[in-house]
Image (cartoon, rainbow, N blue to C red):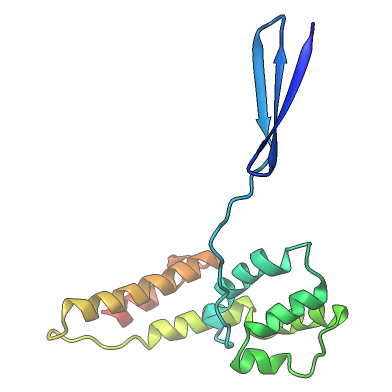
Length: 173
């Protein structure tokens, strides 16, 4: 059986087409193309435990797990997206390979402990603004959205509504 190969350039990437003549089958494979995706901006983390998980998941995905970056680069990115208490927590650590791991550990210990994050969400639920009969639909919807946001955050942390529901229902009512 005779196999012939053809290589062509498509947008700077090679495409390989193989043809097997005795079977008449054509197989083609294209190496991954570069696609221009929009830039993703990391939100600044100021130290509010309610926002820790969302911040860390984004930072971890884009920066921390990126093997093409050095620890010093990662540390510089980390400092650039911190403010307030979070930035103060790692103040004084020079950007070195060893200190990046220390900075991440400090931030996780201070802002990422599950008990602290759950407590912050529960506290926010307990401090929901009071509604009255005269409130418009927009204000009621805003409070409802806040409740949903905190409930979803608690669920993502593995805290099911059975654990806090009996407490939350009277507060909301």
